Image (cartoon, rainbow, N blue to C red):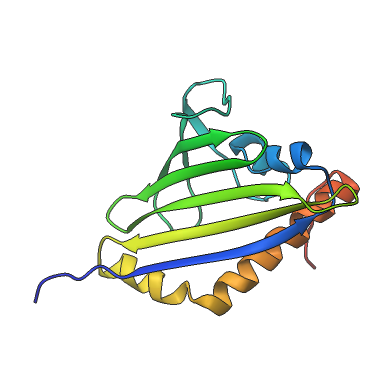
Length: 157
């Protein structure tokens, strides 16, 4: 039987307690390091880690292989997009669109668009269901807003 790739795409809007320029920077590779524990990008191009279209970096997370990220779109302070590949597992896009939400707040629409590259990748895609994504984005919103309020990572007891 031939392999059939599974696919999922979810978008959720989160609200952040900062203006668009400050909030947008937190979705850049180095900006995410400020609020996301375990996010340790290794910059390949440019080596400085400067956020720009064409930038390439890798990440590693427990239980996952290395993931290669390419910044496919970069239009500060409103839109950025990454293409990500975890070889032999999955590929996809992550798109963030930021806009004013009034009273110094930002609304950020975050889209994950993922496709399995193997049976292991398909298993990941099946687990990345709507309930998982809602929880995932709720954690992002909580962690980013905690960082904005306190200047440090949110740690859970």
